[in-house]
Amino acid sequence: MTDSVRQFTVGYDDDGIRLDRWFKRHLPDTSFTTVAKWARTGQLRVDGSRATPGDRISAGQVLRVPPAEPALAESSKPTMRPRHILSEDEESFAREMVIHKDRDALVLNKPPGLATQGGTKTTQHVDGLLDALQFEAEGRPKLVHRLDKDTSGALLVARNARAAAFFAKAFSGRTAKKIYWALVVGVPSIDDGTIELPIAKQPGTGGEKMHVDEENGQAARSRYRVIERAGNSCCWVELQPFTGRTHQLRVHMAAIGHPIVGDGKYGGAAAFLTGGISRKMHLHARRIRVDHPDGGRIDQTAELPHHFAESMNQLGFDEIRGDVLPQDEDRGPPPKEVLKQRAKAHAKQYRKERRGERRGRGTR
Image (cartoon, rainbow, N blue to C red; front, top):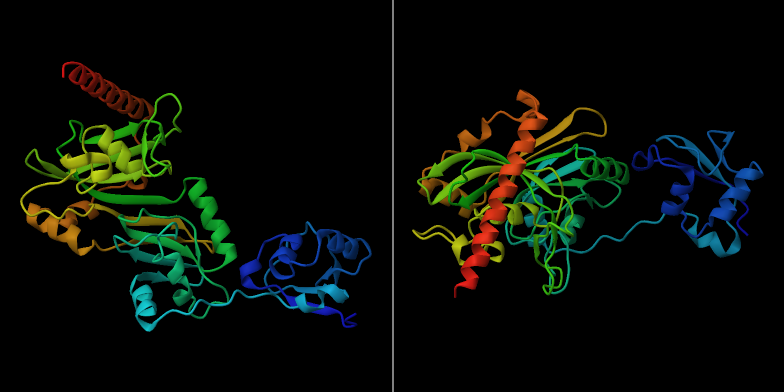
């Protein structure tokens, strides 16, 4: 067996995690039973003091670990994932997406048409490009949320496991704030509205399409604000999802009769405008605000993709008008009664439209 006691210095990436979690990350062949035995017999120490598997460790502390047993000798060093080899063009493309970089996080401006993660027949995606964005960090960056393939804009990426856990908690706890811009067909009757309609996978679509399902769907809540309008044919809206359902904003806007321009999946032929407006989807993650693991806040704005900017210019919309809108943290949240009234109004409008559709089908 290996005779020498091993020592490891806790890295920044592992700050705050449990000791047993450290073993799972860096010495995965060491069983929990073995770690517990070392702790029980006083062989496992942190900065010279006896430790237990459930103790939290901090960056800079020194772990004293007993010699590896024969079968584990080859696992005595922390494991590193090999970097995927990318072409120069791929590396350049990946780095051009970066709009913010610090020790814990990157913010990318994802272009439309690029998937966030791989899947069936999807070989080009952000996840596959992350090896180009390791820079000086020890580990590979990690995705903490996603955007639809045809949705562009701000995408947050964690640069270490500690930050990934922090950001994941922010997204699951809804403290991270995402602001989207979209062009939608028509103009909603209410300029500042909240949509509360449950969403579920649409049967027969293989889970690739969602729909409003008031009986079996998961609760979903979105807010929209009309920024500018182009007559009655189209308007520019700010969108904010308060829940994170698949295709939520797309489903909700289509459900109230105002599909996102270019979103044929949920708006059908009605989602495409004439007059030279691009047929690509006009949904963009404009801004992301999230607390930083070391205090402070990340607040980043992503520039519009070319097709969206061209449509804005053609319709006479000025981007400045969207950026100067007061946010909830500036003006305080709407009273609960106001939110309830908005939700009821939209639900009533949705049911009325559905009844009209059923009557129309019955007369054909």
